[in-house]
Length: 310
Image (tube, rainbow, N blue to C red; front, top):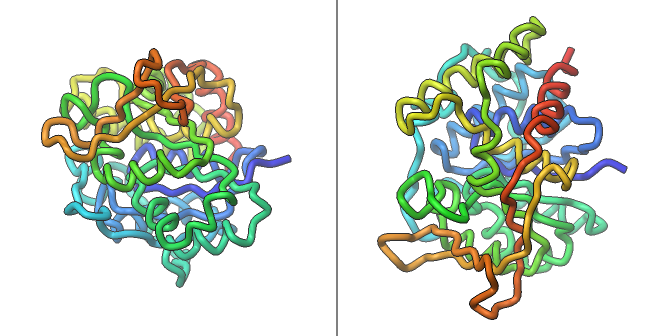
């Protein structure tokens, strides 16, 4: 049976790969795409989702624009990584897919309440939409089968010494989601930094000479340039598809149950995912935290799906 998911994202180069994986993998039933402010403004991330789906002819999935700013903090974006459009690099045709008239939060609530408790949420951006939906309609919580999210870090962050961008962008939302009581898989930087888009990966995509695969290769080339400039990486980590892959095949990520707290107060470490690796807090573990990725299986999954687009 296919895994029913809602992809909540902020496209974003790696979000684009996550959309392409979720929309065409034979074991995923993508029910909706909801967008959120993160890598860029929600207007830009929504436009990017529409453009990606237009290019790849993904027309069966409603796309709804969600929250434009974090719950209590000002919006903070990642133009240094994703560019002013949020998807700089390759030329992408103008979208010809209509945006859903529903707000993204309302669509999340509607789909979950109407479900049989069989929908997994896959957030790959700040958790503002998910937290807002929980606050607005707590009855959705028992309807969420699981949450597979890209965010956080056991150790070093990527937006500062302590925090990973998605959690740092809206730590108050993250605190709500991490403590909601749903089964959660956290796909942190320790996992995603193993999913490197090496020149060999890009060459495999280009060799197919297919439009979607070539588009993905062009995205990864731009992503590689900004990651090298900002972080010094020789190849960029493709974060967000890892959270989709963890739904398709949970064994692709090795993880451990831990208690994870979200720091919301400290100026030095706001947005840090404080992972109780050894159980020293005595608090019950509520999150499966990934720490290793089956890299070859991951890339076979991603590449074979990208090549399946006609």
